[in-house]
Image (cartoon, rainbow, N blue to C red; front, side):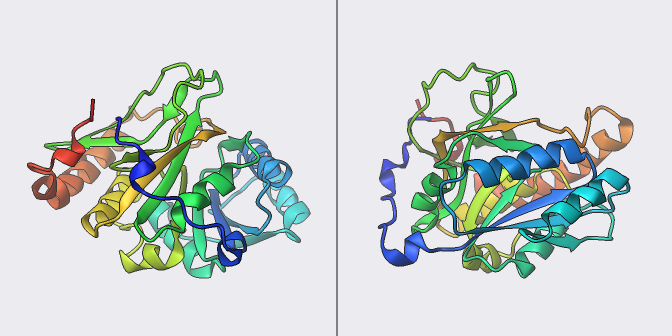
Length: 274
């Protein structure tokens, strides 16, 4: 899309903005080797220092996971979610406990490789015109996994430019219909103003549904492209090809269509700009 975020001015860098606390919310269940890389990459790489990490454990069973928790408790807030897995409910729960003015939802299978990633996302998140701010995500092989989510009538959703080798050709922030919650920032007040994530979407479509609520309220969603973050997509979920997972997706898609089909109809914003 050539719908660049120059339409939205970056927030002024006054003292209040520079000091805004960001709550980085990370759900997790075991797979401690991925979680360790994620947290260490945040702590060692990030140039913006006013943040907290809020980790939400969802019934981890492995001893090494809890041993790792013991090593990070002084610097990381650890919440416990004992209900069945529901991505939307887990993140809503964590958001209620977060102390920050801004929320940053992040998957535990991500790894930060850019010092300025939070700073770049903050530039847009603090602007009153902005809804959600996502960023470019790469597969471990350097190909693009996420550069915004496109939504087109009657309800087709897809990641744009997925699988294209990243060579720095996408270096400007862009306005997009939606961004993935694998790395999504938003002002906490706005998150609750639109009702947070809909918990009827336990896994699929929750981020796209959320972003469309922001669009409907008049906000613009942004994807920043300069930070480098790697994402091992679906490391916890595995391949989505079992009958149960397919049926879960179908149920979520039907709900998504029932809510947004009318809103998408005739809305030219959802068509890719050329």
